[in-house]
Image 1 (cartoon, rainbow, N blue to C red):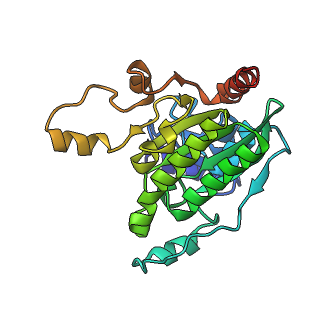
Image 2: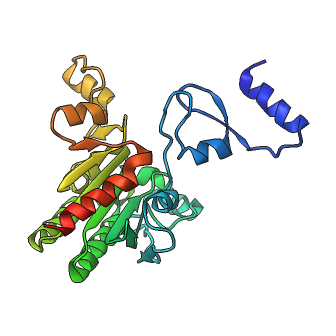
Length: 270
């Protein structure tokens, strides 16, 4: 009898509701869901970082009770009549792959955008691009710094060339933010890839990454198959990118809020 089956049987005998147990995707350790959540979705045995949805990420990052969401009514449209796309959109509990809003971190005003991998792999379509640009425009108007936390598989293929256009659109908005003398802090969570990595995710004044996050344009298997060479160990993980100058700092999840507060204080004094 495997451990997971045994754990489920024990929980049933004790009258514990089904679903209270979970399993680490890396080490297969059976964990109480409550314990995992209290540890910020990090496995206490192997240190594996489970992905956070946008709401949870916001909850542990910004000052309590301060977040004011913006443009929450924007929804994707199947303008290309892509097979199955409309059904996928309707199945989700959130409107799209990014949540944006106004908040405070350590008492400092910010505009924040947080991507949600649970919505079609955090893919960037027209709504993601529009919400990020609107958030940046709001930051320029209110003279607030911007924080974007990325977790994405890249551009959304169901929106074709329109999704690719968001790369230029968001990058242009960040350029305007820079011209206005306002800070942009980019946080890269696992994974940050494709068109998101090739645009706004890597354009921060400070680029921060969570430990062991996969960051890059194409995945390592695709690169290996293309160049037919063995890649270095840890290639495209955040620690490798920090060593080679693509990421400024790798920060543990439990220290992210304090690190962002220190950076906001630094930029406020400039």
